[in-house]
Length: 574
Image (cartoon, rainbow, N blue to C red; front, side):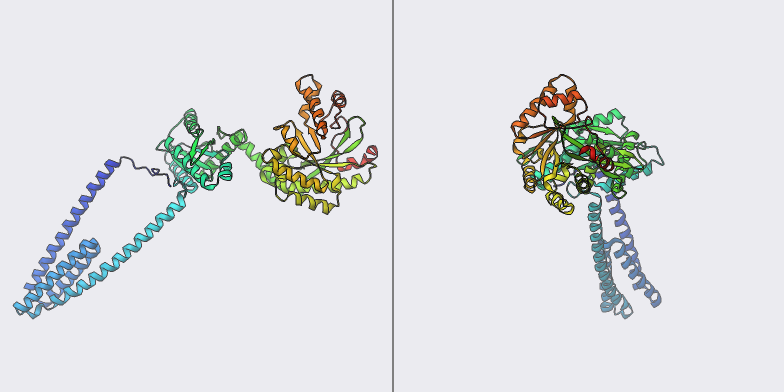
């Protein structure tokens, strides 16, 4: 199935009349030319049979041969038929002269036409074969052009065609000031449709989407598929910004309506990024990239909205790209390191262990906040190698430190959701434990709620495998995400860590303050110990102590310490 009507023909009726009129003129001209040559040929034939001059007759025969060949080449089938008829006429006339008038001097007039008929027949056959070959080449060229510039699924222009069209307008703008708009369209959560219903349904859904878009957009605008679920809309009409927004809003509203695909009713939305020539870019690639940036901003801010590219957005994106590039080389240049924050029992202040926290000190960018670094590492996939490095280095350094402590302490390490969901995660943990000779019973892995929101059963299976090794499991940042207590019954966790945002509320009297106490009590009934994060005041400590919170972690009793600081303070911890 292909979307039709994208190559528009304007004033079709008038154009067809013009073509019909021009065709009739061409046929009339061809007929007149053919008639002239026929008359000329007859005149030459008459002269040839009347003359007694052998040289003149020979010259006339050569001219007749040239006329026959010219007619066949110039007029193809009509010329070939005319040439054959003329030469047959000459041949018959020669036979009559030879038999009835006993004129042997016209014998060449019999032989020459026969040879000419053979020549033009061979020529006609070869020309037809050549024309067939040319037609085949042109057909292949058209197919290649379709493959090169049109999307195979939807039939609409592809990325190359959109870029080519934009560059054409840009080149044209050098002669005449022009302004055009590029809208980058990305469907939200299309991957879920492909993953859950299959690529066949996904393709049918894309066809339905582009069909709906084509029914809305102006006939002078061009829609193209950039790739996957990404589309570009090229607007060449002079529109103001508020008119552009109104126009895109109509597309957005339409896409928000349900789609009936087979037996499924599918709902979707789209994110739109807008760049304008010449303000937002001087080349087609730059305009497309900037529209993509504007769309990406919508994606990161909640989706299903419209955003115009601007210089501030570009600076923000470039800063992020700079962070990504520097992060990729940070490990190689020893810019990333691990610090350790102590955890204590709430009532006795006995050292429970340390949480390993990652830090990035860039010579170029300075100290980068983990809240900035980790999301970038997750988006780029760096978190996989980085997470393994953090676990391994934390185990190595903790072994050195704990060997000098007169206490049985644990090491707690944060695990990214992306890292946790990798099929090789458990094997990676086993490998690190083996390489560092680390006791798994002294290791606690912290995960956030997001690991079990998408697949609680899978997360539970991974937790069980880790616990079989002897590793403890802690649920980190509880209260910042979905906070569903129902999951706690399904997951074999040992520790629940209450997020700092809840602990901050303990300085005030409100509903959330009471929630902390109720949560601690509920966790104890489920045989789950509780760690309070971000404890900074005595008031917070007293409340937690009164409600039997098991452990605390925060600046009140200990800030994160580097390896060197921890070694110099080892006697204090002992």
